[in-house]
Length: 141
Figure (cartoon, rainbow, N blue to C red):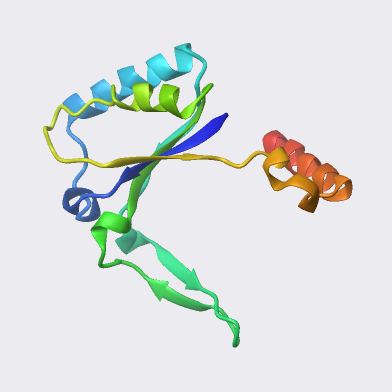
């Protein structure tokens, strides 16, 4: 199973405050553990929402674009990991080990990533083949 682990933003991360050298070193060690264990597929930190945009779709016309920053910090993402583990419980056990050397309050959300089989008959053999080809092409890029 694959899980997206979402590090929620904080007032500090949204203000563009960078992690300390100590925290970066500890996170590097943690990420190294994840890689050595073969569970980390990807992981990145994100710039503040002030450097981003949202595209809103409605049924009545063209999409609209809203430039950041966005007001609700608790709903924003500061970074993520993609982990491949056997269960949600295993993902939780890994994430309980995330370094918190700055002692700040952080919230991390863990969400299972859908696999092709989760879509049942709605993902026809043709759609499945097209999806697999796109994934192969993306991996080559």
